[in-house]
Length: 277
Image 1: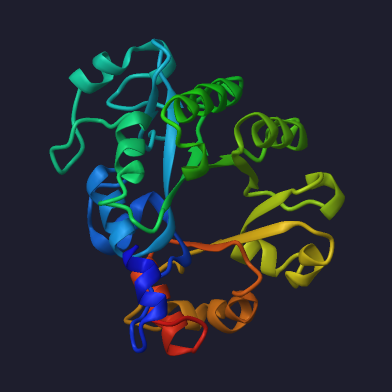
Image 2 (image 1 turned 135 degrees about the horizontal axis):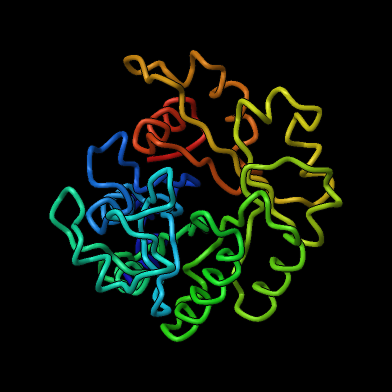
């Protein structure tokens, strides 16, 4: 009701979500614990389209929100071989939070008082050292979201090595209403299948034969782009890499910009006239 009144009353600005996704909750910018409830709340406060977090399946059928180390472990344990309770018993996040589950994150985004504009969760499907875990994580996450009536608040980043992205994307869309991106890989438009979504990395994509984005748009492929400069120098780091002039011109047709510095990129979009406060 409040948002409706704001649209009708002269001079009242209706808030909206920016098409920005915060990588691991924007931890590199805000200094908060990555993939934490605290970072999720900050992403919501910034009015981002989504907060990205990594998810892994545990031995007792839970979905752990975490960022595994290079060996696929969390708190020194392989999630698929241990229960959620065991993983939690081995350590907390740097900010003192208990290792969160997907249910914990969904409770936050489902709370309309906390998340009135509907910021989503981008679930980056992690497999550890066992690639077969990907389908298990997606199936568990979908059932949890369905049980919590939150499928509309969840989207997946399917691993680049998944052998049947079009198949899993169609299944998740048809059975649960969950959209899936093929993450970190660039293919011909037809390989994404009907209603396909390409989630690509800027430097890799900019130097490929698939640039500019209109080559995907014209074939009906949804596109989102990830980027963070190696070192954000002052306030010009994104501009110096060419990201701003290259990508901002397509902002209105992109699904989202996936970044480590959401607050800064939002300010740049406003400064350049692509967004409003």
